[in-house]
Image 1 (tube, chains in turn red, blue):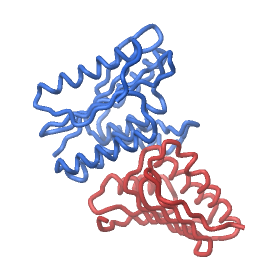
Image 2 (cartoon, helix red, strand yellow):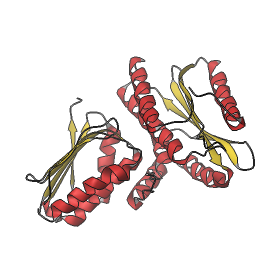
Image 3 (spheres, chains in turn purple, orange):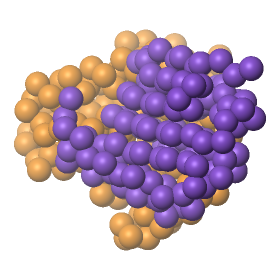
Image 4 (tube, rainbow over the protein chains, first blue to last red):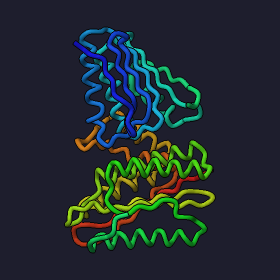
Length: 126
Length: 191
């Protein structure tokens, strides 16, 4: 049985909330842990477990700072989701703060690499 | 700030002092400087403190974010790949100098002489490419998506070049037949 996933926000890691009932995975904050595998592997495992019980998933993220190793690790997570769910049942939303072109471009890079469309949304500065 | 404890550290420290001296005569201020071994906690603290100082200096948010990214990439690079001396100390340094137009950021660490060629060719390739070509390298590396056991992803120098939009100036100074002091310097425009 998949349980809800809750990872508190750290200095260099985002808050991660995985809600099983809503089939939703939300990221908010910074992502620049030194060892990305250590941080992202439990999330990959949660997605795998969820895919055995649910047919759809919604992923929403808003990063403030994201280091290059996290950009790759997050892409791997999105690819894992693509391979575990039918494309039409996946919703990806990539949020970036007004004027933050660097974060916006990462979302656009993901769009060119992945088959699933990504909604890239500008949000107000927090 | 750690004190040099051996010959290796002394040579690195001289380099560190030289960089500070060079920039103290061109109307620049030493903004941040660190010499010694870095812990993950220090990487976080130095990055966050620099961010705060830049905000207080009136820098634009976009410049602050680029500097923060460069710092995290550079410092994590040192932690993941920096060489160690015979006492197993990962001696490294960081100096940031500020003037009206830009920031100059210098990272220094030890490196095995065996990988000098590899690092040189990597940075030479970046420096001889334009921004579009660097972006292409970035997307290719991202798509290949290899993460090492240590957690590195091979995007550090590419990301630093993309953020700074300037060449990466680098230098190796031999310490002995095994090890050298490697430094890489970036310029980030404040405008």
